Each structure stands twice: as structure tokens, then as C-alpha cells.
Length: 169
Length: 315
Image (cartoon, each protein chain N blue to C red):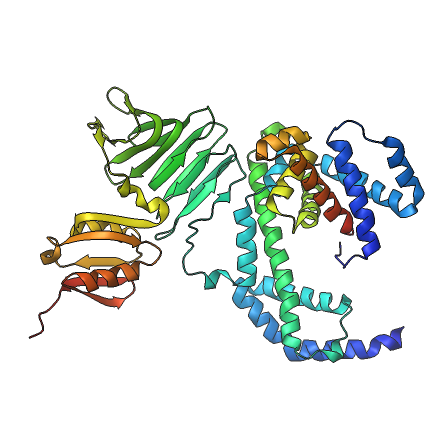
């Protein structure tokens, strides 16, 4: 097992050595922040390490790194954006309802996981599903709010469930 | 959490489970519970998918409603902006002209604004429409049925039966199931009613009722006289600037609102007249059109420093 991993590890080292600095430079220009860029560079290589792609066969290593890096960058911003919305919502809560620091963190983790789970769903499907799951709204009420038929809502829900069930939790 | 291409069988199972879930939740009559039980029992993977769905529901149920909606149902705009920034597409989009695209705004409260030269249009949670013209800003609180106009110009179509109150520095404009444009300048807040009825309560003086086609200026001293207006004035809603034999100086003052930087002109030009419909998504082109149709020259030191002078006669 270890021996089989050797050539792959070697290829990763080469990739890191030859293109790591370039990737970080690209990320820094994009993010305007050296710390986050360095973190994301590490994350990118971690992701590359855990992927099934045989590195030695890469024709265009930089294009590949950029693909992985861009996806991580997108996640990074999505997460930050979610955190911002979360903090805003917390700030607007009445004092008595504000959860403890630990609860807040756990909740943020849950929200982030759910956000990732829902990523890629069409906006209306996503909203209908949230209304159903979070507000416990019935299909008829959702149909009314969205100005669509109940059949459509049912289709949205099936679509959302199917999407979520196919994502590994 | 990982995403891998699911096998066709996994997809099949997920789809079947999803259909059962939606059918049961929809509350429709005649759901065959025995058939569902049979489906679950017939294969370990079926039951696993079913259990997974139950876990999913519990996970959602553990999230407090207000926090969950505010974060997971945050505006599509914000989510899209994220993608754009990450992919570097933002730099390729010249100015954020979103004409013809109406974005749903899925929150009850929001601070919205546009940059110079930018226009945006949203459908609000209650079905109303809000459009911001160039360099405009509002605070929106739909729960309180209130909108604060801080800067610039807006178009508002209020759907439903609950009126919406627009607060400006010189009074409150209440729109009652109808459409109106409200424009805030340095000393004046102008309300133009396109449909429905609108009530104005100036800071001073009696309130005024406006019908479709009527316009009033609100100032610190109170409401001015009610007058009729030309709907072409409000062409910005469709991204056009319309001029009907308009003095060039007035036209340029309007145009200037949509351009970042400095736009100056020689006073000798002010008597010229302009007629036409000009697309606002490219104001450089509007200047070029003026130069082509009027005896004037456009001198661009940079895009942000433009001077219009009389054209020198070529002997």
C-alpha cells in the first residue's frame, strides 16, 4: 500500500514544488490576502492528494490545480458569505433567544453542511424545500406563496429530496 | 461530505424515496402505505435511503427557524456574487446592468443600493417589485411595510392589499396597491404615480392624494402643486433616456447621473435641443451620438473627464 503510494507522492511533491508558488500567487491576487491564500494553497494540495486523479499523467498541471483551487475558493467565499448572513441574523435576534457560544458554533456547522447540501438546487426548489423543512409549511401554502400549482411544489420537493439523498452526508 | 457521480441504481433508489416522501408530505388522499412499507422492506438500500431522509429532516428541524431562513435562504444575489467573485467573472461584466432580469429578493429586511451607472430590479417576498436607478440607496423593512429612500430614484410596484410607506427627508409617501416612481434630489423629493393611488404626507402642511398620471414635488416647506407628467420621463425603468426637444443642458444633467467622473460642457451649447431615445447601458455611445447629430465635439481626457465644446467650423 505504502509502496504503491510512493510514485503518487513523488508526483505530488513535484507538483507542489513546481506550481505551488504560482498557485498561491494566483490565489493572493484573487483574495487580496496572503494568509487566506496560503491556507487555500494547502487545502488545494490536500484535495489533490485525496483525489483519484493520477498526478503523473497530468497534461496541464496548472489548469488542473486552478480547477481545484477555484472550487475551493468558491467554497471559501460561500462559507464566509453564509457566516455573514448568520452573524447578521444573530444580531437581529432578541437577547433572550441568542444561543450560547458553543451552540452558536455547532449551529453554524450544521448550517454550513445544509448549505453545501442544497448547493446546486434551483432557487425556487431550494426555497420551497426550506419553507417546508424549516417552517413546516404545507404544500398548499408553499404553492400559494410561490404562485405555482401544488403539483409543481410536489415536484420541487421530490427534486430536493432526491438531490439531498444523493449527497453523502 | 463528498459528491461523487452516483450509480444509476443509487439514483433510482433516491428518486423512488423522494417520490414517496413528497407524496406523503403533500397530504394527498389515497397514499398506499402498505405499498410504501413493501418498498422499504424489499431492499436494504431502500430502507437506508428512507432512514437517511428521516435524518435529514431531523437535521433541518434542529435549526431555529429565524436563523435558518436568514442564512440558508439568504438572497440569491449574495450567493451569485460569491460565485462570480470566486470565478473571476465579475471583472468581465462591464457594469452591473441587470435590465430585463428580475432577481428575487428573499429577505424581509435589506439595505439595497446601486452604484453610478447601475440599475437593479428585485421581486420582493410579498410579490412587489422594486427597481433602483443609478446611484440610489434604500433601507427596506417589509415586515414593518416601510422603505426609507436614502438616495437616488426608485420605482415601486406594490402588490397585495397592505400599503407600503416610503419615507424620505420631506415626508412619507404611502403607496396603496399601485405603481410609483420617487426621486430624491438635493432639495426635492418628487413622486410620480403610474397607477393606483398614493398618499403624501409632507412634514409640513396637509396631506395630498395623487392619482395615476399625477406628480408632486415634496420639499422642506411642504407639497408643491399637483401636475401631470410625461411617462417618457420615467424611461430609465426600461434602461432608456428619453428626450423630446429637450434643452441640451437639461439632457446632460440627466446623463451625468449615470456617468462616474466629471461631465462638463461649454455654456454656448446649452441652447441646443435634443430629441431621441438613448440606451443607458452605454453612455459613451450617447455622447458619440450627440457629437454625430449636434454641432459639438466630445473631448475625453479620460473616460472620467469629459468636456463638450462647440464644433469648430472647418473652413
